[in-house]
Image 1 (cartoon, rainbow, N blue to C red):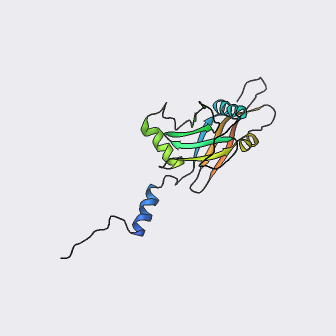
Image 2: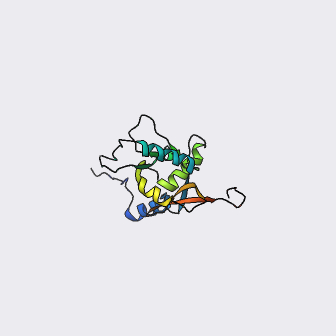
Image 3: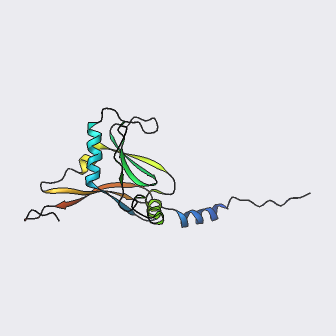
Length: 162
């Protein structure tokens, strides 16, 4: 007796077409994190005496960029409570599921994961000129890389920030 078996795995060409159409990192997307909350997380790191390893790898002090329920930063300090800093457009505590989920997929992909950002790197890029204050820590996601920058606000002549 002959049985006809249909493969549930698409052909290579079809798989490439499917992945190309649904790949979450097709375009560049920026995820801004509010600086006052980032500064609070950095203060927790500076005060920490012990930090957690990432997947059993010792990394030193830094922030974990996590993607699961939203996209957020958190210090790797071994403390009972830690500051969670959500990306402005990917905060499940403030946004509807469909809104934050689309941003999460566009920035971090559909799977959960964690990336490490050292405190030294954040302090290096956030050391501004006199009169400048950080407004947001921005993480840019492209199909092949992630870059970090700081958005600045400058003090105006009348003492206001712009």
